[in-house]
Image 1: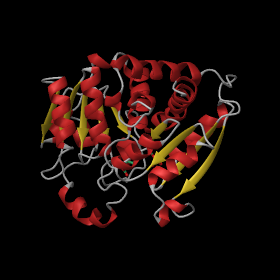
Image 2 (image 1 turned 135 degrees about the vertical axis):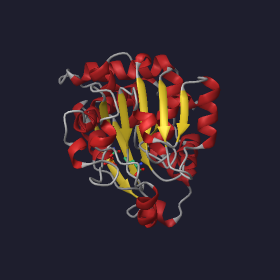
Image 3 (image 1 turned 90 degrees about the vertical axis):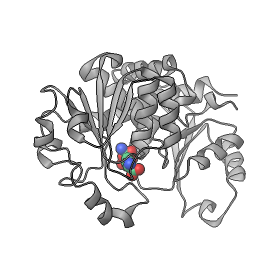
Image 4 (image 1 turned 60 degrees about the vertical axis):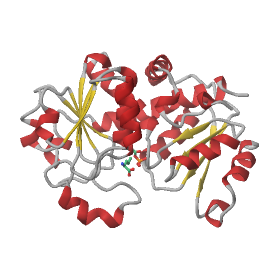
Length: 305
Ligand code: CP
Ligand code: NVA
């Protein structure tokens, strides 16, 4: 299967394709009767915890008339060293799509190489494409056309930051990332994006410089899943990177704040900002389900081999 038949990274797809999924999600959000996936099965394989992504994929599948099977590392042979290429081929004979949350991007790539059905990246250490697509739906609902907007990223140069960088290059919006020293986003992703969209993406240290004139301010946890042991050290390094009322006073008055959740109140974001009128975190969480409906429909029906 070609890389376009999977959703591993945003950069594998065209701007037009990403916009189509966002538009389809908007339609499916208001259509509760559509059952295009009746008789289809998605297999979810999650090596990391999840509240939103798991349940929004499962409820999206059910909403479209399909069903799901869920596996973790512990209750499958993944935890006992079964080769990914065997797993991919076996599960492809039972299910119509594999939705995978794992550590290395190379794991979803290896699964996709051998799977006979689409593989959808539900978060790796490198990318979280489904999250950014649903966040783009939320942003367009709140703010309109993407290419007219200014985005800021505050904090860790993590999987979310890397995926926002890809999105900025693909859609051509301005993105300023304020990251502490030693926590820059992936160098290859940055280079790819800067080559594709010169002048659109800027990396800096100062959160105030990043949020000035921003329409959309993005924040995520300081320690991602798998970095629990670094929590204390990171709390120290990120202490000037909290999105709070003082930082928000430097931004546009009508700026919105995005947090993909889970949030650590008092760390990367203050309670006041997360619960305040500029936060759209819970609309983002809802839109994950609608975007996942669009993704599942597309990959299961349109890319079948
Ligand atoms: N935003 C997000 O991916 O949340 P979960 O980790 O709960 O799935
Ligand atoms: N960067 C976070 C995102 C959680 C949805 C993590 O990988 O844990």
